[in-house]
Amino acid sequence: MPDWKALAEKAAELEEQVRARHLFAGQILTLVVLPPEGREDWQTGNFESNALNTGQWLAALSFKYAVTGDPEAARQARETALALEHLQRVTGTDGFFARGFKRALAPSPDERWFFFWREWHQNGEYRWLGDPSSDSLDGIMHGYAVYWELVADAPERARVGREVDRLIGRVMRDGHRILDLDGKMTLWGNFNPWILEENINALEALSNLKAAAVMSGKQEYEREYQRLIREHDYAEKAALAKTLPHGSSPLYDDNLAHNALWALWRWEEDPKLREYYRASVERHWIGDQAEAFPYYQIACKHVLPEIEMNPAMWDWLARYEMPRRQVEVGGKSPESGPRQTVTVEGGSLDGPHNWLRAYWMGRWAGLIE
Image (tube, rainbow, N blue to C red; front, side, top):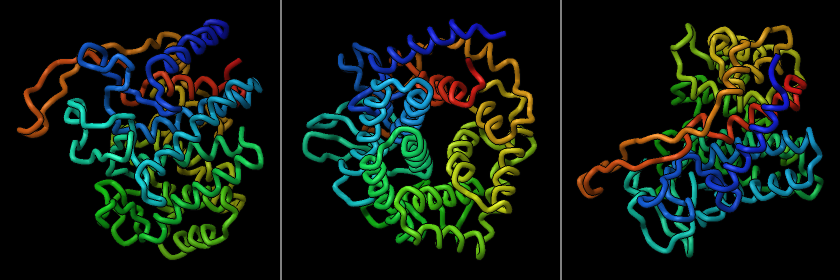
């Protein structure tokens, strides 16, 4: 039997670590470069997945509020929702969003250590990272959906609805693509049915449209959702988002799929379409049931109450510690300078915010006491 008290204590400890070292204006910075290479305010690191991870942190806070009714959890969730909003505002372009942002008046060396350093832009007192992806939007929309359902009051729901309308409206008008400031599709910004490369992007497209229809109240998104299903078989593609056998698709993609399936499972009422989405979860369960990652286990159990979760997930939760490790970061081009070794804290997927998301979703679902 899991030690529920110990898990609650670990949750409190990890939340303090998130607040102390991984937050800026409600935004999650998972991979932090420690001093002396990094800044003393903990704002040096890899901003590539801030949008995704901030959305997942918003989901964690929303589950926590739904379980505890704690006003502080609601306050932090609102702050995080505003951080997602700022991802749009900081670009200066309506409906276009950044991967992440920081307060800085000039470039810093760490911008050349991670991702595409030429994608950094200046807007007043902020620097922001461009070339956002379908992954970035996946996290933003998942966070908004859970927050809208579990935390937001009527004015906040209206505000989120407007933000979602800006985001998904732009993507839809641009042919189900995320277009960069130069008018070209970002590297991983494709949901378009004529050039679709992966079924998971069909799943994400349907989730984005369904969530936009619910949260904005605009039926144009529902009509487009139905059109993609009717004319381009997106529901069938969504059911096949998980590539089998196990190991054929990365676990990172499974995280994105479970994020997208949340809105579809919560808000789709058509029994036939729900069967497609249930089939998608079943395929993920077939492929991932041996994995001990608690979020995958809990997300599957939410849709498939008949399954038996992998007991190893309890050990994973109990033994988890904040990673502190040596990694090589540095030159991605001759202009980037020599490579160097820096100490970083956190991880790209299994950072503390994702432990907390699994914990509080488990509490919300009645799977963790």
